[in-house]
Structures are given as C-alpha cells and as structure tokens.
Image 1 (cartoon, rainbow, N blue to C red):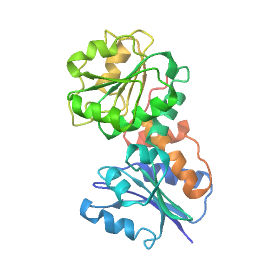
Image 2: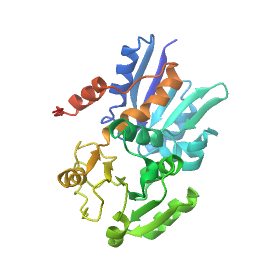
Image 3: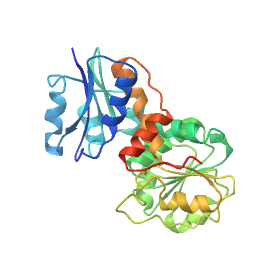
Image 4: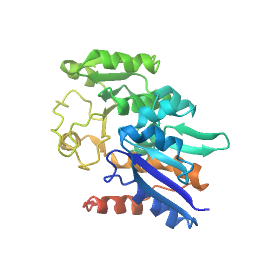
Length: 283
C-alpha cells in the first residue's frame, strides 16, 4: 500500500513541504511513499477531513488558513494541540486521526541548531505579535523555561488573551509604544508577525535598548534575511533566520507517518534555498 501524506492549505502552491518530505523519503529509502500538495478551500475542509482516509492518506500537514478549524473538526489531539487549539500535523493512529502541533518544537529546534549557545534561562524573551504563530512560540518558550515572556502587540486585548489562554505565569504585555522597555535586558527577540515578509512592509523598531548578548530571530523566511534581522546583524547581534523552523517542525510528523526519524542537514537547507532562488554565503 502506498503511504500517502499531503499538506493542505488555501492557497497551497507555494508550500515547500513536499520538497522537504520527498527529499527525506528518497534519502531514507522509504518505499511506496509520497508527499503531495492538496488545495483545500475553507468551505471544503470538513468534507476533506471526513474523507481523508478514503482518499488514501495516512496523515497530513496543515497550513494557513486551516490550523484552528482542523483542531475543531478532529476528535483527538495531543497535549500541545489542545493547549494551542491549533493543528499543523495529522497522524493516523489505531484510534483514528489525531491532531498534533509541532510548530513550537520546530522553533526551539531551530534555535538549538543555529544558536547552540543560547540558553532559555539567560533572560527575558520578547515576542512581537500575538497571533497563532506567537501562541506556538510562547508555549514553546514557556516550556523551555524562559524566565519571563514579554508579549508586544499593538492591541493589549489579543496579547492578554494569549497569556490567559495559555495560562502563562511568567508573562507581561507591552504595547508597541512601550518597545524600549520591552527590549531592555532581553535575551531573545522573536518576530512572529508577517511584517518583513516579501510583499509586506518591514518591521521598524529601534534595537538600541537590547544588550549586546541578545539573539534576534524571525519566523519569516522569505526573504531569508528580513529587515529586522539585517538591523540586528548591523548592530553586531546574533541572528537566526526562520527557515530552520520550517525544516525542523517537519521532523516529528515524518517520523510518525513513516517510522524513521529524518535529520535537518545543510544539504536539505541548501536544496530548499535553491528552490527559493537563494545561494547562501557560507563564508
């Protein structure tokens, strides 16, 4: 039987998940396995989920705009998906399809990979934004033992809701106008907004309040170096781009579907960058 997995979203043509997973399928010599894109309009989502097994799929990845709706539609979830009320990975188990969330895993694994000296306990972490991505990052940093989370958002209500929904005990809300105070003595800054993404305006914040030891990262990976990361680099701060989060979040799902744990390697990173039209300077 062919082991079929897909990534579902709307639109979906831009997704690089097939490139990643099919690379691992070839590399690990997994027979009769394929990973493909599945365009699913919002109005067709529930029917697609009901028929997922009949369509031949043993699992799926879920991307925008379906993560929250898939959570509502599935009967079974892992603990993290329950906490976030969002699903990015669907796995066929003995009890049916289960919704999981690996976004936070991918975020932390990327930091460990690209900035191995970074320590969660070294100081406060600043999260820019309070949307779905911010929730995954906040939960992951909370679980990692960050001493304080500072959620910076233009409106307090959404940031307050994030803290309440995730039951964060070591978190505070700052408005955009309080950015300097939020950045003071911070160990980590994470942009979880779409600002800086290709087609969006750059995020404009003054980083002079950050200590020289701070790490700045962005979940955006198109472009690979966002305006925020460039500004941080020019200040001499350590930076981590967002591509690794995409690569690492794919690992647990692949292992669950195909029974082999893949590795995020420089070869895979180079392959995905080439698909983006980027040749990375490794000097």
